[in-house]
View: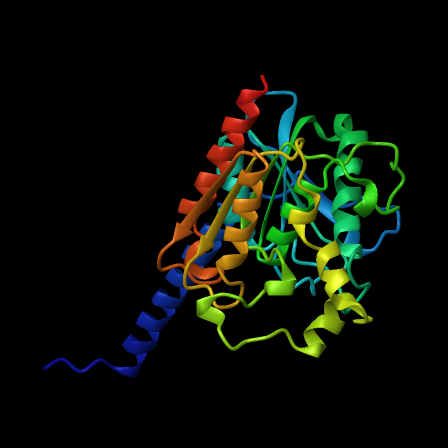
Length: 306
């Protein structure tokens, strides 16, 4: 039997530690850095209204763009550049030739309640259209994607592309259009009036605190829910959708995505719904496999218009 001396133990521990930290540093070094960081799209110079822009490393002078919106229950104002987002969004989009625009938006409980969040998204779209030459963007195509509450905002931006009701007055480019060309919605809420009407969430209900946090004054809450419902704005000009949802998601039940998908089809809008049989919330429904499907979808839609 071999007995390790204390000195040999510490030497091995030191080597293993160096190896692990080295691997972690290498993994981080493989992640893309933004070409432009903390771009102020509102003119207010607040962290909640800034964006990062990542360009693909190809020889093209202009790049079609995809805006990505994080999930946070509408409550975070600074989640735009996590390492995970870089891995699952920026990389597959760059491989297909897209610039990725990672945006912040105002928090419902730190800054301003709904509809401030969708007003920020619209302002970011207008900013990109107005300033596209400064950032080497081809804004003949702007896609939008998001997960969870970000999926809701992406879907809402998509269906209300041609509706001024949610336009807002954020930023300096109010005369520019805020439409998008394609939408990918990862398990976003749709109709909050029937949010938990799904077998997997039977017995649950939105609390008064949850309603106040997102909407503030909850008088006539049903009308506020309707204002936030992407289905309300679908028209003949609504862009194509890809919707991805896990069937075991007990945070945002899958019925929400089914409602949106069915409403889009009913209005003759192109929509594909992909269900992950064992998918939960975030976790295994926001993996490279799904975000590669996203990138392929945007690539297909972009090439349709060429």
